[in-house]
Length: 479
Ligand code: NAD
Image (cartoon, rainbow, N blue to C red):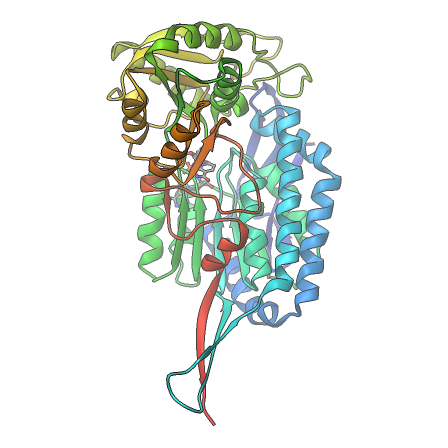
């Protein structure tokens, strides 16, 4: 018997719907468990429970809120190895990456536990004599949280932690691709001492369960991380009810490599940024924009480094690149490889499917050369272990190419020139800019988000999160 992941509604674990298998992408014969697909009625019950629980949680003392968040954060950190293995098994990232994700998720809860005690308002002088003005923040209400599979615990953590810290109740709709890690997180939150109904979880597909959550008039705010296409749909559903919206979506991040870059570091950052996490990161370096003079050397060294990467079963300690998350995503990668070739790109290395000891979605990391920025492979998010090199004449062209995209989550530059780095930092049209660092990899105590089609609404993380999870109230007190 495998495990069944159930829905959490009003403090009770429920399993009414169809059971759907959770398959290991490293080994299709390994059924990790089954999730009980929530029905629209379950979503409505979860929202109703969150609405009932909301007012009491909003009035709960800050120390009690802090204690619950500390409990969740401490347990995630203590169990990061064990839960990291579950993520590796169901999502396909390596054990080290899975463990790192869970540890970081614990840090999000610990950070917002401390933020519970920093909820301090402002006082202002009135323009009217004898009147006091106070500016305070109140919870938004019921927050719908819709998350993707690529960071199944971390994305949920960086949304649930501030939602609870600022006094909101939550209904989580995790990705149906990663129900096991979602169930573990929900279990820890459930045991943290929150009043019943403050946190609920419904597992199921986006078009019914996710859509029922986003379009419900019982939701006050929707925070979503996922693809642009789904983000657009969610925004339309939520705005019909005047619900608040926060969307973090895809990208096409550029890493610029200048002639004066430290080449060892440039290759190291490009390999990590493009291929770790099997390239399935919203912050992945999917366009490598390289100055002419160092182009050939950079490409040669990238090919050698990519070919040295160990692709394998995610639970194998030696593996550096795990499988692609699903057969559907693998097919999409293969389609993009064909498309890139038909557009005139050359596959300098990789793209082959690998037959290993277990049947899984294994693909060698691929590098396209001879590409330009107008090709679809350089304009659309592929979300796999595929990156493109774009040769440019100089820094000005590199900056222009880097900014010539519909997206704007992260960008990076490899250079030893302080003035170029400063110029890039100021003129790069992305939400996060990296200098001599990979485009992927951010801190947890500062804001995270992008521009253009990558993000919509207030920033996530750090103190900036309160702008989404609270409503400002201005009070006038006369005598
Ligand atoms: P996705 O958009 O397919 O799904 C995300 C979530 O939305 C899932 O829970 C899904 O079930 C749900 N969903 C799907 N259709 C829905 C609908 N009509 N209504 C409501 N909910 C619906 O994305 P994915 O494949 O899970 O994740 C990959 C995407 O996530 C990539 O585009 C990646 O760039 C993005 N991502 C962005 C960030 C960021 O912070 N910017 C972080 C991680 C991933």
